[in-house]
Amino acid sequence: MAILNKTDILETITMIADEHLDIRTVTMGISLTDCLDGDAARSCEKIYEKITRSAQRLVPVCEQIQSKYGIPIIHKRISVTPVALAVGASGGDPLLFAKALDRAAEAVGVNFVGGFSALVQKGFSAGDRELIESIPEALAVTERVCSSVNIGSTRTGIHMDAVSLMGEAVRQAAERTADRNCIGAAKLVVFCNAVEDNPFMAGAFHGIGEPDCVINVGVSGPGAVRAAVAQAPKAADLTEVAEIIKKTAFKVTRMGQMVGAEASRELGVPFGIVDLSLAPTPQVGDSVAQLLEEIGIAQAGGCGTTAALAMLNDAVKKGGVMASSSVGGLSGAFIPVSEDAGMIAAAASGALTIEKLEAMTAVCSVGLDMIVIPGDTSAAVISALIADEAAIGMVGGKTTAVRVIPAIGKRVGETLEFGGLLGGGPVMPVSTIDPQVFIARGGRIPAPLQSLKN
Image (cartoon, rainbow, N blue to C red; front, side, top):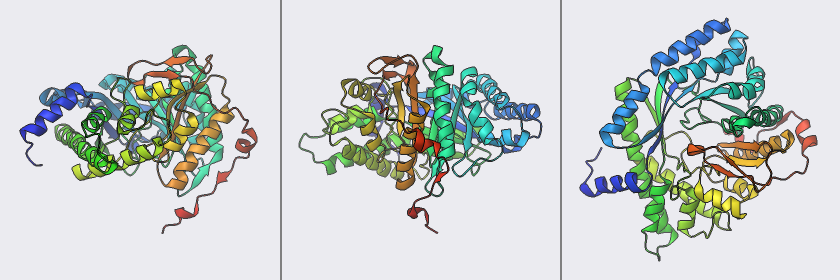
C-alpha cells in the first residue's frame, strides 16, 4: 500500500471527526456444516461451541484496532451458514437453533448474528418450510438473531409459494413484537439474488461456498462523500461530481481494507471482502438522501432522483474496486428510509413514496429497506411488494430485497421509533388494491431469457 501523505491523513481525520465516517461492521462468517447432526440438541451444542470458540476474540480485536487507529468500528457481528440446513439434517425444532445462536452471540458480545435463513429460490428442501414458519416466533424470543430468505434469482425465477409464506412471516413477525415497536420485522429480509458474503444485517448469512471462517468488513461514508461533493465548485458538471465521488469512495474503501486485513491477521482467519456500501444513519449529514440533494436534487424523491442515485452507485463502485481487490457483498448505496435522516424528511413531506423507492431500487444496492407501512396492511399486499421487488432483481440481474415493518396499530402519518441506528420513520401509504388472486396462484415465475448465459 502506498504511504499516505500528510494531506491524506488530515483528510481522513476530518472524515472521522466531522463527517460520520466509520467502519459500520466487522462481521465474522462461520460455517456450520461440520455441526450438522441427526440429533437437534447435539447439533445446537456443536453450533454454540463453534461460534464461541471461533469468535471469542472478535470484539476485543476490533476494540484494539479501533483504539490503535482511532477509526470507529460501530458493530461486531457474526453470520452463519443458513440454519435451514441444520434443521433439515436433524428434523428438530428451528427455535432450538435460534436460541442457540442467540446465546452464542451474547456470550461473545456481538450485537447481531445473521443466518437464521433459507435459500428457497427454486423450491423447498428439508428444513426450509419449517424454518420459514418459525421465523416470527424465533425473532420474538431472541434479541440478536436476524433472519433472511432468498425467494428468487435471475437463474431460477421467483418461487411464488415462498413469496406467499414470506408475506405472512413479515406480518406475523411484526404482530409478535408489537409491544416492542414491531422490531421482529426489522430483523427480517426477503431477497432475490442474495449474495454469500454480505456483512450487513439483517441479511447476512455465510454462504456454503465460503471458507470455514472469514472476516468481512462493511464501510460507511455517505457523510464524507456528501462533504466532498459540497466542496466542489458550483459550476462543476456531473462528470466532475462523479469523479469526486470516485476519489472519496477510494479513500473510504482503503480504510476498510486496512481494518479487514489487520483483523484477519490478529484473529488468524482469512480476510474475505470489503463491502463499500454507503450505509446512512439517522444523524443529520450522514444521509444518502442529503447526498443526492447536494448533487442537485431539491429533495429526495423528486424527478431526477433515480438518475442521480444511478450515478452515485456507479461512482462508488468504480472508486472502491480501485482501492481493494477484495470488494464484495452488496457494495453501492443503501436507501433504508428509517435509518436516513434525509429519507425520513422526504417521506414525511410526501416527496418520497414507495413507488419512487421501488424505481430507485433498480439502480442502487438493495431494495425496499426499513420502510414503515400501515399496521393493517395484509399479508397478500406484503407478498406482492416482495414479488415486485424480486422481479426488478431477477430481470436486472442484481440483488434486491424487502424489509418492511407493518406498524401494528398505527396509520399513515404516524411514526414508529426503533432508536439507535435503526432510527424511526413515518408510516408510509401503500396500495391496498387486493393482489390475493395473483399471490394465491403460487407456482414459479419462470427465469427470464437473460438467465441462459452458459
